[in-house]
Image 1 (cartoon, rainbow, N blue to C red):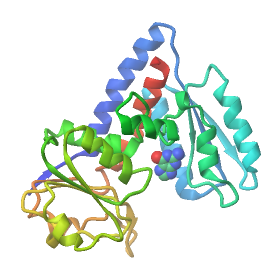
Image 2: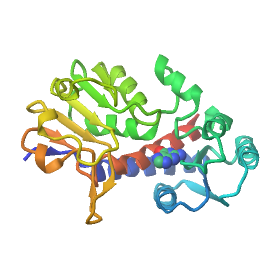
Image 3: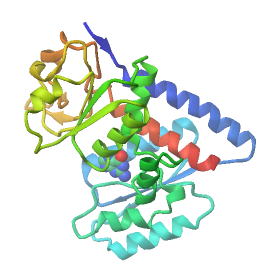
Image 4: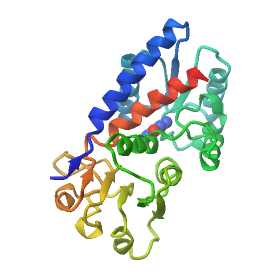
Length: 279
Ligand code: GUN
C-alpha cells in the first residue's frame, strides 16, 4: 500500500494552527472578517459556501454572507464589491464561482481590491505569483504544496507534471512547483503522447476534469500522485481524475478522493484571510 496523503488530517492541523494565530491577533485587538458573496442558489456552490462559513467559525474568523438573487446585475455586484473594498471591518472578499451567465466573472474579480483578494484570482495576485513577489495564492494549488511539504515529499529537482491549464489550478500550480525548484511540464488537451510524458513524472498533479482518466499506464514506478478531480459516479460515489485502485500498487504516495486535495482548499482560504488581516 502506498503512503496515503491525508488531506483531512493536514487541513485540520493547519486550521488548528490558524485558530491559535487568530486568538493571538484578537488578544492584540485585531479581528478578522471574510465577506462571502453568492449569486443564485446553485446547490454545489451553496455547499461550498456553507463549508467556508463553518471553517471561519471554527478558526475564529467572522463571516458576512451575501446571498444575492440570480437576477443580480453585474453593476449591482461590482457596487457591492466596491463597497466592501472600502469597509475597514472586512479583510477578505470572496465571490463564489461560477457566476450566472449574464455576469462577466473576470470583471467582478478585477473589481476586488488586491489587498482583499483571498482567492488569489485578481490579475495583480497572479502577476505577483509569477514574478515571485508576496501576494495571495490560489487556494487549491497552495494547498497541494502544503500537502507535499507536510508529507515530507521533496519537490526540488523532481520532474513535475501538471495536467490541466486552468487559471485557478493548473497555471498557478505549475508556477508554485517551479518556485519550489521542480522541473515543471504542463500538459493539456492538445498534448501529444500524454502517456509517455506522464511516465516521466516523479510528481503528477491531475487536474483534468475526467473521472478515473489516469490509469497505471500513465504512471512511473514510485511516482507521487495528486488528484484534484472530484466527480460522482453512477452509484453516487465520489471519485477523482485518477483511477485509485488501478494505480495504487505502482505509486509511492497518493491523495485519496474524497479526503485529499478537497479539504486543503478551505484551509488555505483561512490562511489567506489571516494573512490579509496581518498586512
Ligand atoms: N468555485 C469553485 N472553487 C472556488 C474557489 O476556490 N473560489 C471561488 N470563489 N469559487 C469557487
